[in-house]
Amino acid sequence: MQRRITIVGDSLGQWSDGFGLKTKLGSEFTVTDISVAGYTTEDWLQNKEQMNEIPTDLWIIELGTNDAMVYGTNTYESKTKELISYLESSQNSKVLLTAIPLTNMSSIRETIRTNNQTLRQLKTGNSGIDLVEIESIFESYSGNLPLYSISDPIHPNQIGYELMGEAYRKKILGI
View 1 (cartoon, rainbow, N blue to C red):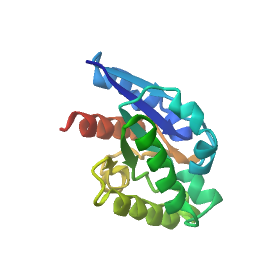
View 2 (cartoon, rainbow, N blue to C red; view 1 turned 120 degrees about the vertical axis):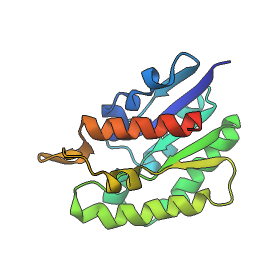
View 3 (tube, helix red, strand yellow; view 1 turned 60 degrees about the vertical axis):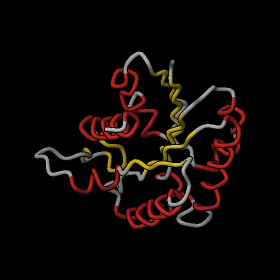
View 4 (cartoon, one colour; view 1 turned 45 degrees about the horizontal axis):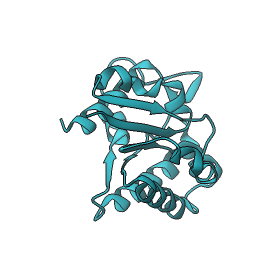
């Protein structure tokens, strides 16, 4: 039986080719990436009918960088709760949240850190939600090559996207 996965994200999802999950997960999974560069959680709430048109067993929510830039920590928790509630109820689906990377843009790092902590708290006590710790993976990365280019402090390079894809793959497969 095919497991249907839909990625709801921003430019990190859109520019990564769905974190390579179509090839990483194999033929028993169908991966649909509807990520849109520049989108916030609020944008997805305004376009939730588009999400509901896609039959999905697992939603990967990769949002937060634009939320940090546009809204800071204001309304992040309430908007995220609203999105989770909608996704869980619309198709009886599970939700996989992403503690996103802090980026190399110093002006939003602490806001992202705070919003990621909000996601961790939302996961606690909700069996329909899981979390992928991309923040901690990036923060503990000790490779010789940087995860961001000098010209783009927000979008990871191919190494960063590969780390993200592997983290999602392992979480989905229970590794």
